[in-house]
Image (tube, rainbow, N blue to C red; front, side, top):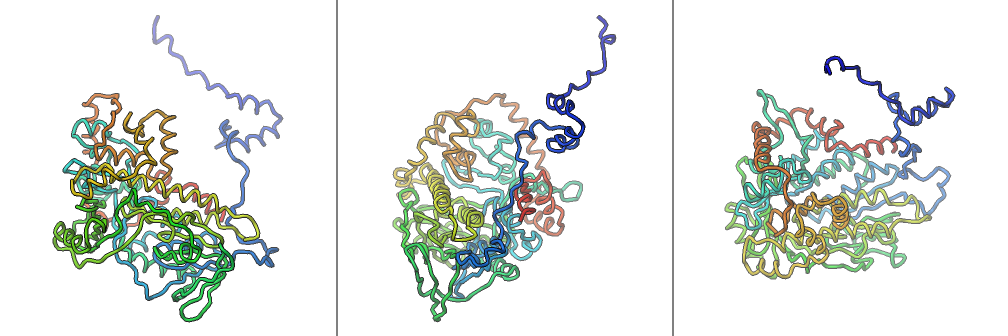
Length: 586
């Protein structure tokens, strides 16, 4: 048979079943159905299973007829400033602008001036959720970019990378383990981190940004951040009271009536947010909410901090370095590196910890000390008080969890706060949600300690033997049976993800366990080593013209296009479709 003779025009597309049904209707009814289920002039059968009924946002002021409701929540007192206090204030003004929001803090309590490392949700929280102008933020706060964490941790002398694109094996962890004995070539961002480069490339003498495709976070100087947030809050209508709380007066076991300041003033609000830090002045002290310790899993309780010159070398990652009795963070800011040795006070004295820090990082300036405890209060929300930040819970600085959890708690408060005390409140649901998230962080950080083979000091020997990771033992068993977890069978993978129950996900668990070479039966690659090497070479070619941060950051801040793309382009990781829709319903 002659092939050319049989060539024919493609058959016209057959109408779908839904088209057949609609075409059989009278014209008026057909038009009505098409308006309901049509997209771009075409019927979309999937629209049969979508929500079409709009619902007004709960985040609305009390109705005009409720003016006499004496139980209505009209005023919120945020006790304590800092990042937790001002994030809360700005979020309430953004999403519940009818509320009278006041921050009560004492000018006698200084802001701790250490570096803050964050995770990618901070970028979207600041610029989407709080609608903070990126150009102003970069000018005032001077953040640097963070692509992930470099861990000087585990048996490999080179350590391992924990990049923010760890959810995708764009190059491949199994091939990286086979070809080079570690996971450091498994994603594009891990390759950038190894080379101290950023996703801003120079192409024909012009900068081209890939920031909108690869998630990143911020490093910030805490004092500069709080100063900016304080100014922004006042510009957005947040009231400020400089006062020291002397007494918390209750009208019931779970209810705060008012606060008495040291100068005799009485401060009364409808809702109180406790942002008093580790003192937990309202939730812990006044309401007596029990504290549940994580000390059997997280053994550190102190930090000695200092700054050190970096001579213009702005690394695009946080570094976590194993120390004799804990670990040390290095957070790059424009002026210098901020360092903090997180240690166990039962294993080493303050003076010896400071000496070890100075010996490991020559040139670090005068030491400053911070104390903390790991754990959470049994409840975050009691009566008319909700605690946010350290006043409710804290693990330790590893993995930049503090501000991640503050943002979660802030968004939970904004969503769950009732309009009036006359109706029901979602306290039980909120308390269970936050407790579950914090407990998951406990186990996640625990696997960093349980499996770190870098040093054989008394502290680390004890950590490997005694760190409690029992809450995740089923997950660890699943990992040992077949890793990576993210590439397991869909049903098992979903069950494992449900067990993890926190933002770092299975990808984070894989990264930390594989990075430390925790024994596991590795899944079998369905490709040849040559195919992996070809992909690795392609990734290297892609980033060959990437620039270091000290070059890239000024280029991006001087031209608004990359940041505008980041938040407005629909193909950007930072574009929030749900938030864009919610903003229109405010």
